[in-house]
Image 1 (cartoon, helix red, strand yellow):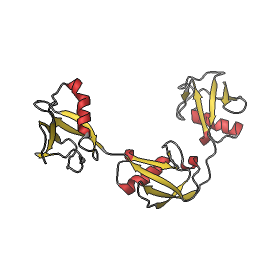
Image 2 (image 1 turned 180 degrees about the vertical axis):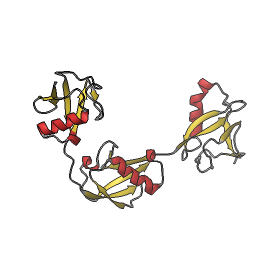
Image 3 (image 1 turned 60 degrees about the vertical axis):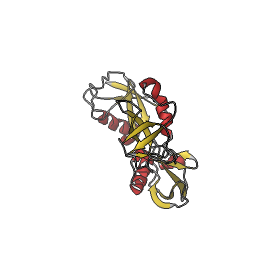
Image 4 (image 1 turned 90 degrees about the vertical axis):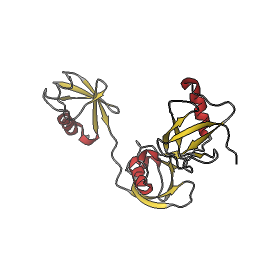
Length: 238
């Protein structure tokens, strides 16, 4: 049967295909007919990308069907450059050799291994622009010895807060380096919906039986994921 192919650029063309041909076999015929390498072809029919292992029947392709042909650009030649990786706000830079055709995610994985932090916390910037995972390094046109800044997103974790005269604990999400005073704002947001008591005459927080300095961080106080912080009426005298 005859099937028409419509490239994004150029004129449509017709190729005869068999009822049991697979999508990969159709791509091979397109390569012979049009000289477009199989690895650069993507076939789209009824707004769905066709998998190579499917056959004509499985794709519901009929005589005189029209299939969209997406032709990927030729990959760039293998080229290496050196990038200078630095952790903000430090001015120190670590040179790393990369392939410009690599995706940004691969560079993030390298940085993650150096910093020993989860990949989702690593963000890369060059010339003030965040480098996106679905782009290649070459997409940003970085010259050799370009500087790439690394920012580590703060680690968030849950603490359990036991309000004054309450029987249930309240889960609050904070960052390790947040000051304890941030907890007041979060509790005020949750109070209307959860209806717990925040003493109007003032209150303070206790962790591991010690009063907490609200101008110090949770990290400074040794607060870990899931720890309980208790709220008491009154104030701490220095």
